[in-house]
Length: 224
Length: 368
Image 1 (tube, each protein chain N blue to C red):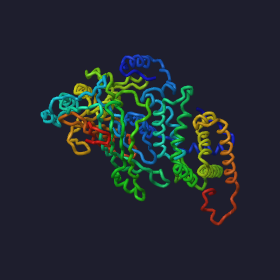
Image 2 (cartoon, rainbow over the protein chains, first blue to last red):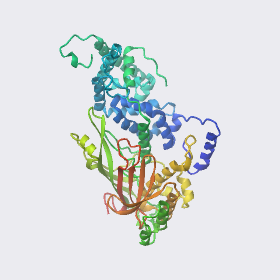
Image 3 (cartoon, helix red, strand yellow):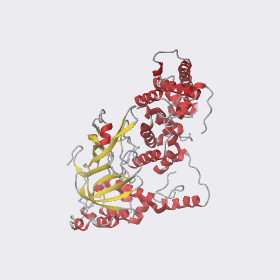
Image 4 (tube, rainbow over the protein chains, first blue to last red):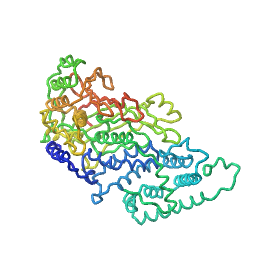
């Protein structure tokens, strides 16, 4: 809620007193933060930047993710008047803006997925873990990583619209939220998800087949 | 939000892949947050500068570049007025501003000589021309895979802007950036081998943003009505510029509030430099003098080498310096230095250094 700067001192003291009297201050709603001051927009940032960063880092890597997240919030601030106040949760809106910004980095995203597909074991930060290649590594884990690498390679080749719905789903958005984020009907989201998942299933099932022995097999990234 | 357990194998693999993404560390988020909020504070309008692969690093909290509206002084009746109406320049002010003076004493002395600012006569069909040249730092994605590393480079950004006396809105602005790019450090030079600097980009815009999208009058959009509404008593002026206390984030010592006020004043005196009345400028400098942490930085010049008096304030991430003319008290430029937060930039890196000037001209595109 925007405060009146001219009379802010007295209004602020009132709120301050409540905060220090042991009562929990009310948690501001997203809509209040979006319509509020720059400082309140900072609260919105604190609330959602971590998950947006993760989404962007998965798509374009950590360094570019910083820029994309910053750009997302700058655009959100400029377009705050257009925010649909009937939607109490701002996260689909923010994911939608981030997705549009990511589209400018299409090439970087494809390279990032290809890099993940080419790398060996990935640690939590997505970097190559040089110490994670012991021979005694469990077979099932190796297989899981091989599937993940296949999935990354598939995402790199996939159309942008299918990649969008899959990665928004992975970011834990519901189909309704994905529709709101992308500005498309829910039926279209379902249709795209259906096709994208079928694409993934085909690729993963092909990767799960045992490879015939090849003279150059030790160069393959798909099988150890 | 809790994650729904995926049932299908392809979704399980997708979630595994997603979960391997970078989790942001708090310093990264702090840096992004600072970048976002300072850039919001520096934006007088909703005009957006796209950042694609190359971005400006400077927080630019007080540097006016790309501004699309400059206020000019027009009386409420629409009649042009003369502002500021000061006394002839008094060189004794320059003599008195010894480097040994601290920040508050320097500001109070400058406040006493605001009448030295030359009067600018603004006619109904004239324009306020603002020229700003800024040395700043950009960054570009490098490495293999691309984006796995960042290299920094210094470049110049020149902004020319014409604002109508009658409408108070910008009617034309030219922005040229990536002039004379060069690596920031030797390490950056190494990283940039095999990469090209961004090409020079020159934008010439004639039409302001859509009507109704101009920001509310305030320190970042100092319309004549807003300037006229500001009290010339320093304490009352501070109240007008101060945010109310945040209920969830106490500000012991008032340092955050002081930083916000400093940023707002620094921006306002640049945007409205030529048209501030001596009384308001005096009050603004007297208000700055009361802020905790305000200091004098000796021996400072603006980007063009004009000698000035620098007043600075430091927050967790950067030190912002406002460079003022020792004789007229007008703004010469600003300087911003990294003191923390900026990932990849050494402490002491100058991320912004500018020179600025405002003149009254007879037509759009005229510069004198």
